[in-house]
Length: 110
Image 1 (cartoon, rainbow, N blue to C red):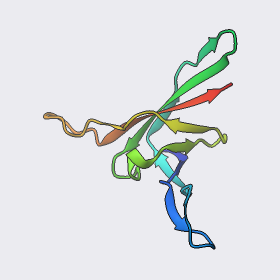
Image 2 (cartoon, rainbow, N blue to C red; image 1 turned 180 degrees about the vertical axis):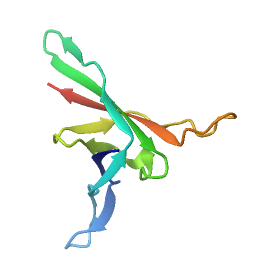
Image 3 (cartoon, rainbow, N blue to C red; image 1 turned 45 degrees about the horizontal axis):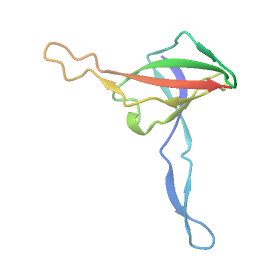
Image 4 (spheres, rainbow, N blue to C red; image 1 turned 45 degrees about the vertical axis):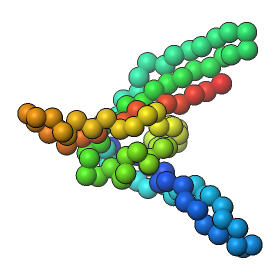
């Protein structure tokens, strides 16, 4: 198992003036089965010099907290990744249940 951090969902709190404000969720360390960085895509143009890298995370369904609310993760090296779409859940198949989710994240630089 490999540790990474998941930022919980944003929440609404009241500030000192009793106004509702949205604050980011807290980071929580969880263990995942595996993760892999996909081949980066470099885009260039007249005003673009951008690198887009994709990350695939394989996590046990029971240990990943509310996968569709985990909009941001952070790896051990400090890089932060943004969620891309909903989690892929293959536990409803007729022949077998892998018990894992496949989650896609993206990092954009530039």
